[in-house]
Image 1 (spheres, rainbow, N blue to C red):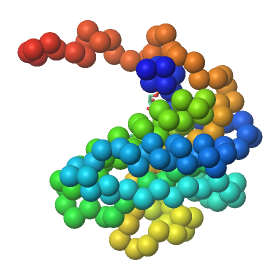
Image 2 (image 1 turned 180 degrees about the horizontal axis):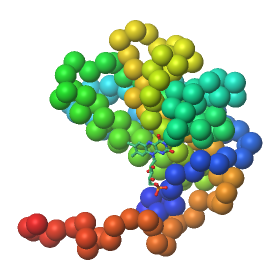
Image 3 (image 1 turned 120 degrees about the vertical axis):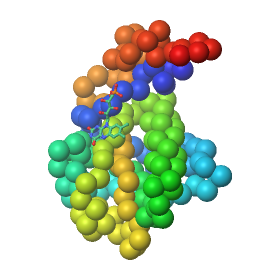
Length: 169
Ligand SMILES: Cc1cc2nc3c(=O)[nH]c(=O)nc-3n(C[C@H](O)[C@H](O)[C@H](O)COP(=O)(O)O)c2cc1C
């Protein structure tokens, strides 16, 4: 619960690298996520090289600038879905992977920030995934440069009363 309360999108990172042990712990949290029929459609490409991160950020110039500054970025690479239903399932599953990864990172005091991927050709150049696959999303990771992760007392969220309907809408 502390990690859930402390996690927020972090887009400014210090120069401190993330140890291999911590990265593996975070990735292990990701691969433990549930998925439809346990099909586990995900592949994680982990980038830590600064020059590669700068190039990877160009895959989404508007919303991916923090990727260039991250200590490490995990790209979620999946097979091109066969139809709209499979695409929905992939996206649902990747959402759960993302949450696990972000919470495991927050538990270690490591910040995280989503990024979409717009330019697939650019992502493929940097990540080297085979034809028939695409990079669905990225999560940048790094120690927060703004302020440490602490449980947020008043998160920027709709209230529980507004969101929840007990028994009936
Ligand atoms: C599907 C999805 C895509 C997102 N894409 C981006 C993105 O491309 N760039 C970015 O900076 N943040 C992105 N975000 C982060 C959201 O803006 C963020 O979750 C929201 O503003 C709430 O911020 P908070 O978690 O810090 O409260 C994305 C989040 C989700 C769930």
